[in-house]
Length: 191
Image (cartoon, rainbow, N blue to C red; front, side, top):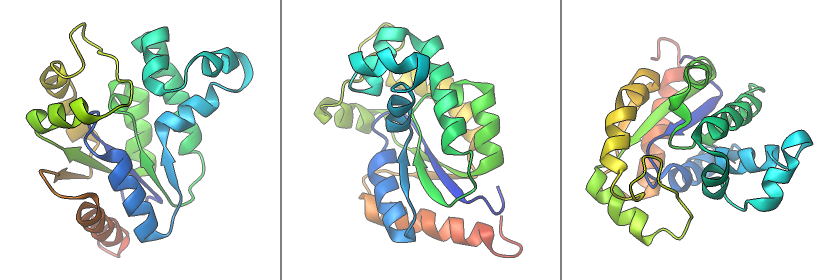
């Protein structure tokens, strides 16, 4: 996406979207938005207010309301986060690409980077992560990573302006690489 003010980080759970996103926002001097947090803030408002009162994380909300309702709420939070054209870094939820409307909005309003991580490394990270992450496919959250990657990889590829193999790299060097891509995409003739 040329001239996108928002940089959206895509990828499976534990791929580093939040940690890389914070580094990237700091490096660029722009706000950082965590879509899971934006979703919970949305749930504090209006008719969705009771949802936040009962759920302290996006994972708990997902487990409680189911994936279909969760994705609709997530799409509303995404639309709100990308409503303004102000520069920002957005760490999306792993399944944000599941809805066509969310993919279209990301493609239109953001420079999208897929943080690609090997499923074995993701399982290691997930095992160390204290954040509640419910399974989506009936298995435990760690064993379903390959199935989720198989399902979402074409969706990530369709939306991503760039794919970044994260491997064992730390967040700071990854953030610097993304910052370079984003700057180049805004330059005349950039892609």
